[in-house]
Length: 91
Image 1 (cartoon, rainbow, N blue to C red):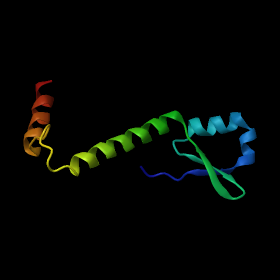
Image 2: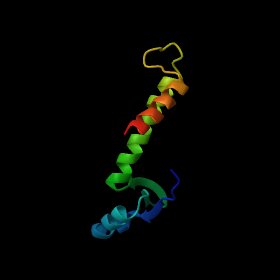
Image 3: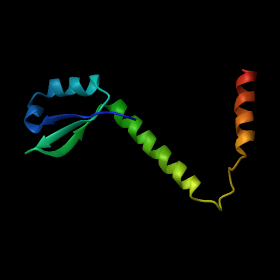
Image 4: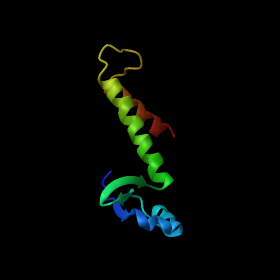
């Protein structure tokens, strides 16, 4: 996820219609500054949901990778890939 956030001063929040349009049209967060410093972040709902999904996936992967004693649900990588390939061929 590579993006360059937009940065706008807090006084531009008066124009809510324009801010809403920018959020909907862009797939990047908008950093709101106050006195030259970051104060808050706005983003469209699709970007937010995607970000949360990526964070949750990363957390789950890290938990799985950092728990070598956990055997439940483990599967050999090659068997897993064979299953994926065979499932695609059957459809």
